[in-house]
Amino acid sequence: MACWLAAAVPGRDREGPVRRMGVAMFTGLIRMGCSRRHERRRGVRPSGMRRLAVGSAIAVLLLPSAVPGPSAAAAPLVEFAYVTLKSGFVAVIDTQTDTVIATIPVGNSPGDVAITPDGRHGYVVNAGSNTVSVINNVKATIPVGNLPSGVAITPDGSRAYVTNTQSDSVSVIDTGSNTVVATISGVQQPQHVAISPDGGRAYITGSGVDVFDTATNTPIDHMGMFIGDPLDVAINPDGSRVYISIPDINDSSSSYVLALDAATNSEIAQIPGDDWPGSVAITPDSSRAYVTNTHDPGGGGEEGGQPEPGPGTVQVINTATNTVTATITVDTPLDVAITPDGSRAYVTDLSSKSVVVIDTATNSITGTIPLGADPNSVAIGRYR
Image 1: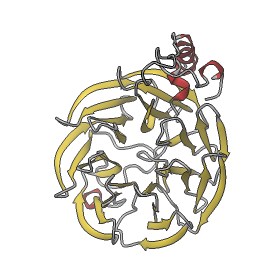
Image 2: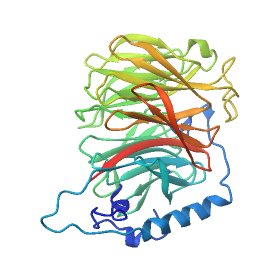
Image 3: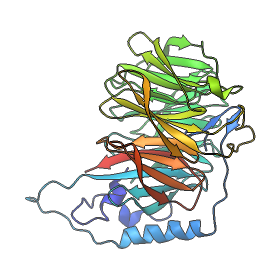
Image 4: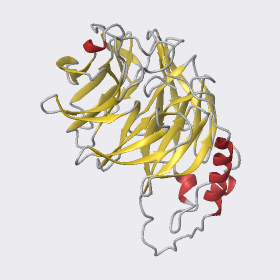
């Protein structure tokens, strides 16, 4: 996905299409698209957003570039964070400088975003357009079902799974042809999806949690024992645990994060949430899970699309003990992504229209990246 940016940086590959980027080139509820009763779509693109998009693109195009010769050292590894904006754009953040270096137009009401393992392609669900935008040197728009919410990509990068909340289905996209090659039907109001590290299983939240065999796209298991509505799902990189956020619509004090044994899909622990748990991200070493929590006093405060006022938090869960070891205050955290080296967490904050950067060694906030528009989801990709 980052290939079109790489050419803009000295010493990096010029094979990307920066020179042809042109016009084309990511609310979801808590990261993540939309819950059937709790949409978090809001915000109007400020007048400066269009100027930011055009200006940033021009700036990227004008940066000097160089092509390494045959004997030159391998291109340096670069890293970007991609943030979907309610205004219909994806903001691209250089994680070395923590600055927005470009904005990419996508579809209406972009929500979840996922990056392919090679960092060259990004897939953005557009809840308002019922499409998926592919942002890379190909550029594509893929029709999917109604109200797409979540997206996840298989470890080999060959497939993207997209949940369609109002269609009760999951679209399976071939990333080589960027076409829908299969549709999984009968998944009630699917929200989000995670793929196991071995690529063999897809975990889909909705009315319970459905587990599918990705080789055949047939069901393996269904878990419907939850008090609230399961929302986000993440799997430990070592494949041993599954973590699911379960906000209780009627009583936020009953919200929790469910830990499952991935081998048996049996419950290991229920970790109390801090009000209204949403997005879940796990560190590369599988040792900690970071969970966003919005403030929702009395329960049901998200009805109508606006979180209740008051500071939210990001909980840090020790996955060995399944206990909360730190709580970080963030005004209205929606989504969280961990850098591939595990050193930082990037959290979208609706209240400040920014991304908050957390040092995972100290679990302290080290910076804030202003966006100028309402953010939703965030994903991080590396490219060489």
